[in-house]
Length: 386
Image (cartoon, rainbow, N blue to C red; front, top):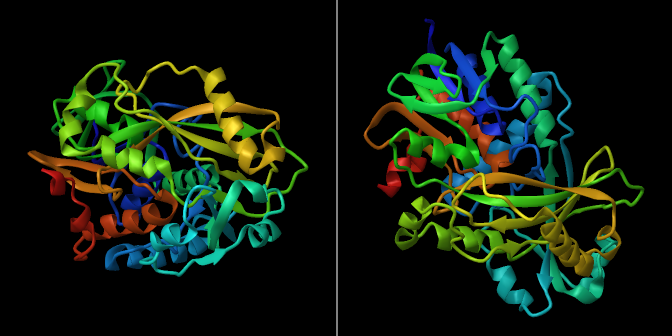
């Protein structure tokens, strides 16, 4: 049996970026992904690159590195990732104080501009001015997450990496086992399975403070309507939900089967891609079963109702409801490094803003393994929650 230097579990943006960077520093790498056609969080990502959003010295540095890396990647990976710059509109609900909401962003690397509803509608004519008290705006960046992931994967294969479509059932020291009984040997194993990371580790007898929401969006058919900006709420309910659901007192409830820990939230947002399709929503549910059944019809109606107030012309566009899992940690920062009491088993997950943080952190992580001292990677160790 061949033994790889690294086995990476999960073929979304985190797994493919990490596999590519590990191969670039000379490691033999096997990437394992359960789906031939991805149905993960990367597939349904908005693809935003919030390089303006860093609030600490480390995250501000990573934001600067992240946008520089995204600008380099099309040439480096020899692929079109649909990278572009466009305006972001963070809308403020009628019952919220615009100044109070603006204060939430005062530590950001790049200052945001407060605007009134009329100015917001000049930037985005599809907005309903009667639905907002104002908005914040900043120059944003965007990439097609699916194309970026495919580009990373193709470059990884060109560099000599190996990839297989198998579902990993269990991880042990030095190997992983598939649901078909196959065993793969690796000196090191990195779990990049996104929202499935927690259940995979749990099946392997490993506890980790990594969690997931059931995220739901509507993907429309191509439309002649033109959305000029990325629209998102300034006060994202999803982040508050994640913080409350991962508090120490709630942590043990995640092991209860088929439970809903808290009421769901809907964050009305919209993005349009180069192919003229749009993604609308995001419904976030805290169900402890990653395979829980969701009423798609009712969920779609609720997303459309919320979108209809903010962007009325988009609410009735033909589209399809989709569902995926989104990983998160308690402090909204990624978990990168060895798991407690698990030598050579690493977690690389929990990226709240993967398009800005994954590219620089994957590169930093890989180079740190070959002797380059890194001052940032240790700050994201999973053991900070031990």
